[in-house]
Length: 433
Image (cartoon, rainbow, N blue to C red; front, side, top):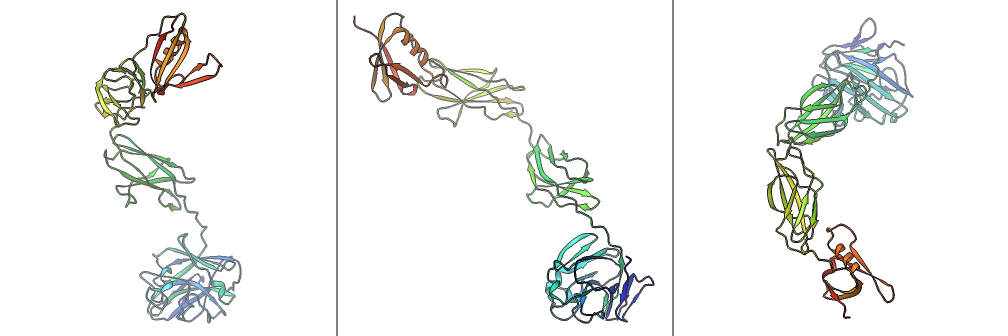
């Protein structure tokens, strides 16, 4: 149904088609209602084009002469409600006036802007829109006023001039969604960005700052796809990024912020470092790193370091450390070296060098005497072949095989377990004939 304005006083004039209300300078108020229809329930939306300097939208109650509770431009305390639009300000809605709470609803508009008002009697709210963008709900208490109510338009107040035209209500535009999950990946003089694509986005704006939280500068507009590579960066500088979606509805808000610090790519870190203990030596090996000019070997006597470099620019992926003491556990890492610099440290590997024990000649029984870390001794009558088995177990590579050796009591058959790290030394003695 086509809507028309109905003039409510002699201070304004209507166009021939009843669409435009005009008020001239020197008049007091120029008011009109929409279709002279009274509303008391439901949700209703009206749209107007802003054509002049001082205008307003609101609702009025009690009677068609607008004598009663006006929700726009009324000087009665507590009764002024509505949207006041002006090139600069609206006299009765500026901060510091008797209605300072209305200051938030005094909005700047440009000629040709579409102003919409949505009155929801079911929820008691009144919301305004500027070119289909919500200015947020302004009032939540309109149902406290007498009903039914009229939709009113004000084109001018005393000392001003203005014009407003009723238009077809635009189809509300759904704002474009904000991109999510922005992530960055730093490279050599570049930063790669990715984010979750937004449905119906025509493109994305990429923004960058050198301070967390901005201010941001747009470095790429209408980017197609949900990835972007920023090649205009300097190694060593931290950059902070956000992206926004772009569509017919306009531009979304900014995404989450993600940061990255581009740097020259270093040599990869060696992997699979292993250590094998020997007599006063430890043998190391690791996986070769492509592009490595050499390797630095580092050692500590405490797990996790701190490490001391014991060999630099080692060629090949093996090294034998001959500067060790039997019985001491050593912890090793290696790093790769190239023209780009030194890599991070490899995994840690440990070994405890020990003097090799020569097994006894097989045949007959012997006495095996073992000295423990608490200075106690254990003696076992065993076969020479079991001594050979025990010695092989003791000489094994650290951190491989069983950590305990099991002896069977020759009298009652019970089992006794000896922990490797508790053994200090042992002897093999011939039994008396």
